[in-house]
Image (cartoon, rainbow, N blue to C red; front, side, top):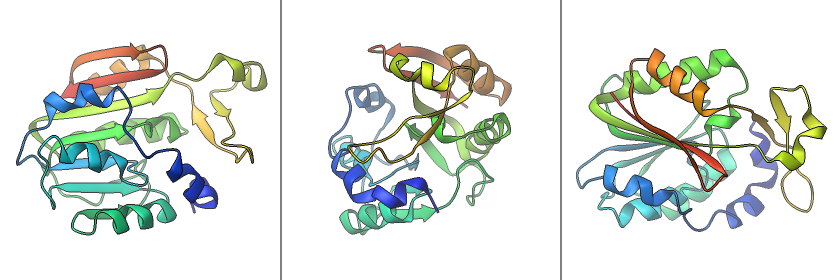
Length: 202
């Protein structure tokens, strides 16, 4: 069970629109491209991709929260949604997807082994010439002292302070992991001082 299942409705309400960094993804998506969204949540990226030309049936969402997937399926009945842990071996065959997105989900992989397997599996299921678009949180300094010395940080959500756990990372680590898995890193930047954005090609 995902920690997000306990507050899926509240979390979904806070994720109704796209983030500015989604615009960095726009030129990477073209009509006829199959897109895999790892950590899709309520499927909000799907709405953005509609405006990029992604047709019904070309979008595949994958998430650890069954409750968030229920919302995504209701809103996008003609697309494909799967429940599972994207820190494990993915259920898809090799060379399946043109674009793989991981929007604010990589930081939920709480061990180095999960991170390594994530990149290896993304590389495996991506078509040659495909693109990975990954964003992950630069953890806010206001939580530093509560998590000092820890690699995995506890950061609550909402007024009810629902528990969430994130793994701290850096641009250097992201770049190294991607290259080690065989990707060519096109860019790895800090976007608006909030999120690291990695764009890599197979």
